[in-house]
Image 1: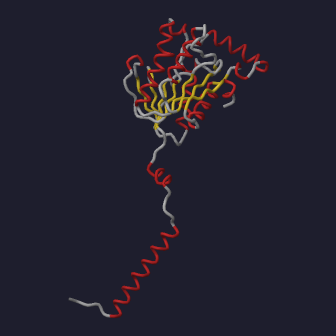
Image 2: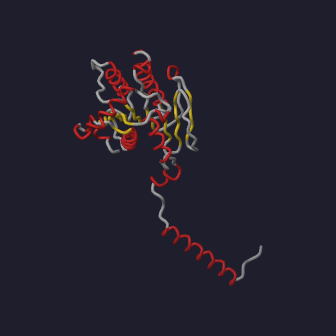
Image 3: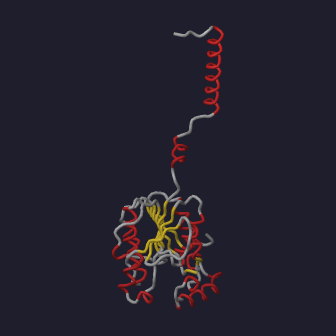
Length: 258
């Protein structure tokens, strides 16, 4: 067995003590990460589902989410693909009447909507504005979604004598009964936006209403003024991200200028 000489042994001991001192100093200067910091180090941004992305509000929701650096992936669910290319965007063409599952996600935005005239009948209108919306919410919940934001309409009431408002009200009631952790309902007034630019047919009644609404805007209460689709989208996203447990309803006046 070979023994270390006295000088060499002292030198090794001195080197060991210096190294140990340096490590202790680094540990003192670099405090351990908190539990939150540790979670953030391995966590990712939210994965989001959007249904109705080809509409006025839906298109604005998608644009805002794609521009948000904290959002990891945006899954667009619809009857036809959204003609937009983006690294974070994934299109899913589905049949809402036979929807079984959706990709895993954290948040879901539903902006489906039509008119009785465009749908062709009250039954067809109900299939989109009520049945399809509920089907998406149910599938989203099964996919792990805890926050849902939905675009409804001013005047929504399940007991309304107006068929359109009654269907919107029944849709809200159905979603509220699903036991979602967070549900935000946006009730915009007349939507202001360029449908033709989105490849949609112009709604004649809506066009006339917009002309009158713009002229009478200074005289109308906030909830009855026409509202930009972009304002609705931004207000809904903010409310979903800041949502408290339960159901939150956004009136049109609250979303103006959003």
